[in-house]
Amino acid sequence: MAYDKALLVAAQGQDKLKQWLTGVQLSDVMTVKGAAEARRITASDAYTLMLINAPLMDETGLELAIDLARSTTAAVLLLVKTELAPMINDAATEAGVLIVTKPVIPQVFEQTVRVGLACRNRMLLYKSENEKLQKKYDELKIVDRAKCLLIEHMHITEEEAHRVLEKEAMNSRLPRVRVARQVLDRFEL
Image 1 (cartoon, rainbow, N blue to C red):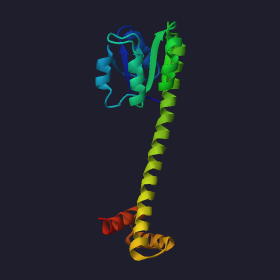
Image 2 (cartoon, rainbow, N blue to C red):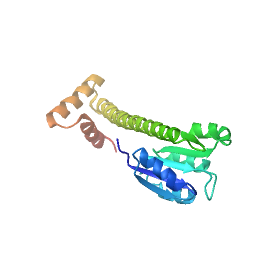
Image 3 (tube, helix red, strand yellow):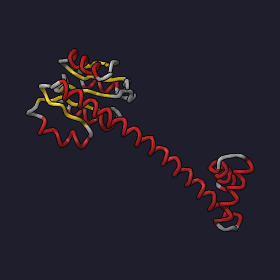
Image 4 (cartoon, rainbow, N blue to C red):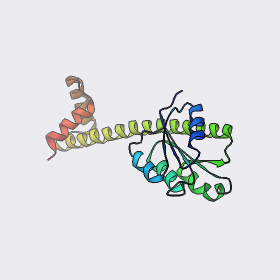
C-alpha cells in the first residue's frame, strides 16, 4: 500500500531519514528545518506521517510533536536521544506521539513507522464511523423535534406523528429527515 505525503522536520540527518521513509513507501517527503515552518505548512492536515528529528533549530521538538498529534490525523514520530526518551515518554505517549530513540536502528525505525501508519488508518476508520453516527444522531433529533411539533399542533399521539412522517416520506419519495425539516419549517418560527 502506498501512502500519500510525509513531512520531515529535521535540522540534520535529512538525507538518511528521507531514504528510510522511501523504504516504507513514503516517496513524497517534504523537508523543513524548524518547528515554525512545520506549523505553517501543516494547517491543511494533508500529511500521512510527520517525522520530527529532535532537537530542531527553534525548539526541542516535543512541543511540535504534541501539537501535531493533537491537531492533525497524521502519524507523528519523534526521534530523540536514548537518554531523553524516559523523560518525555509520558507526555508524548499521552498525546499519541511515537518515540524512536537515537542512534536509530533502521529495522526498528521502519517497524515504528508502519505501526504509526496502521494506528493512523485505524483512527481514520473510527473517525469516519463517528461522523456517520453523529449525522444519524442529528437526523434523529430533527425527526423527534418534528414529531413533537406534530403532536403539539395536530393533537395526535407519538405513534400517529411517526406514521404521518413515514407516510409523507413515502408519498413524496423523500428521506424522512427531509420531511421532518419541512415540518419544522412549517411550525417553528
